[in-house]
Amino acid sequence: MKILTTSFLTCAVKACKSSPLSFPLHYKDAELEQSDIAYNPRFLINILPRIDWDAVRVTATELGFTVPEEKPELPALDASSSTDTIEPADEKTLRELHTLLLETEVREGKLVCGNCGHEYKIKEGIANFLLPSHLGEFELFPFCFLH
Image (cartoon, rainbow, N blue to C red):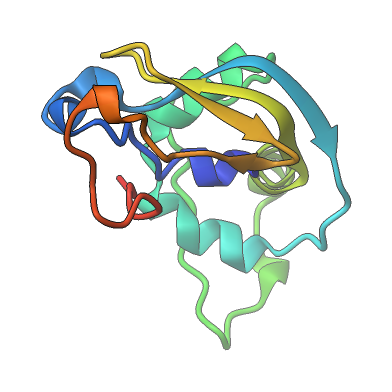
């Protein structure tokens, strides 16, 4: 499971939907793996506005990474813009975010809800968001827990 994916997931328990503690989910016993992915600054610049930066900071800290306190303010790049115009400091930040969000993957471990404490097991990079019946009603489509 890519770290970027975590930035969009929340607890599947219906009672947690209204609690701010259910986001972000927290990693526990995470086994990380790095993979080489082509660097794409345009993708990162365009996805940054959609990411909850506080959640990224929490996740990064829990996994031993550091990110800036404030979300980077980067100029938008459209399909015709050149990436050659990116400032060196911004380039460094983008490469670090690329490593964290896209190249870092949790292969095994758990995602834990800060509200109810439910643990979602991660096996071979895939989190299991199916809920046991004792947790009450659950959503019809368990894969639709996007924040």
